[in-house]
Image (cartoon, rainbow, N blue to C red; front, side, top):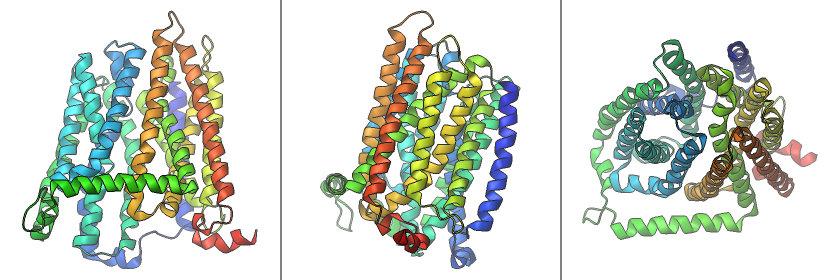
Length: 482
C-alpha cells in the first residue's frame, strides 16, 4: 500500500494538471473583465480570501489523522464511532444558530468566535480523557457550522450592501476560493503526513499546526477586516445592534420572529415544490453516506500500513479531478447538462460502495480494491457538488435558500448519526474479529442509500425533462429539440 499510495498521488496530480489545462481551453473565465480590472474589488476580495483560506487550511489539516489519533489513544472503534456521532449531533444542534449568531454578535465577531472555538477544539486533542475529546467534538460541530455560514455572510453583506458591487461579481470570489480549496486539501494531506510520519511527531501534530493558522486567521479578521469596516463603521455598527434601540437596532423579538418565519418559509418551499423535495432527498442520502465514509476509510486501510496523509491527498486529488471533469463535461464542446452529471456521479458512488461490500469481507480484505473504490467515490464527489449546487441555484429561490438548505442538512446529519450508531451496535455487540463484518454491512447499507438517491435523481430528471430552469443557458435550445 505504501508504493501504491505514492504512485497514485503522482498519477492523480498529473491528471489534475491535464484537466485544468483542458478546462481553461474549453471554459471561459468566470470573472468578468470589469471585476478583474476594478482595483477596489480586487483589494476587497484579497482581504476576504486571506482569512477564509486560512480557515479552510486549518480545517483540512484535521482530516487525515483524526481517527488515527483516537486509535493512538487506545480507544475502541465503537467508542470512536460515538465521538463522531457527537460531532454530527452538535452540527444538528448548532446549524440553526449559526445563521442567527451573526445577527446578534455581528458577522465579524462570529468569525472570531469560529477561530476561538476551533482552536479550543484542536487543543482538546492533547488530552486522552474521553469526555474532553467529546467536548472537542462538540466544539468542532459548532466551528463547522460557523465556517459554512459566517464567512460567506460577511462577504456577501459587504459586497452588496456596503461596497455596492454588482451581484454578478460574487461567484468570481467563491470560484477562486473553491479552486484554492482543492489545492489546500491536497496540501493538507502532504503536510500532515510530513509531520505525523516523516518527522515522527505523531497524529496530534497536524491539530497543533492548525492552532497558529487559526490564530493568524483571527488576526486577519481582527485587523484587516476591522480596517475594512472602519471605513464605513457607522453603517456596519447599525447592522450589528442586537436588541431594541432608538437608532434602528433589531429587537430580540424581531430577530426571533425573523428566524421563525425563515424556518417556516423554508419548510413551505421544500414541501410545495417536488423538485426541491427530490433534490433535498438526493443531498441527504448522498452526503450522509460521505459522513459515514469519512469515519470508515481509515480503519479499512490503516491496518495495511499506508501513509494516511498521502492517502488523504489522493482522495482530495480525485475529488479535484471530478470537479475539473465537471467543467469539461458541461463546456460548450461536450454539452452535458448538470442533471446528467449528477446522475453519473450518484451511479459511480453506488458502484464504488458495491465494490466495498466485497473488498472488505472479513478474513479476506483486499485493500488495493478498497483504495480504488474510495478514489472512485471521491471522483463522484467532485462531479456531484458543482452539479447539485447548480440545480439548487435554479430550483430554490435565493431569498429562501439558506433556510431550505438548513432543512436539507437536518435529515443528512440524522442519517449519518443513525448509520454510525448502527455500526457502534454492530461492533460492541460482537466479539473477536467481527469488526470487519460490521464495516462490510455498513457499506452495504450505504450502497442501498445511494441506490435510493439514484432513484430520486432519475425522478428529478424525468420531472424536469422539459424544464429549462434545470438546463445550462448555452444548451437549452439543443435540449428542447431532442
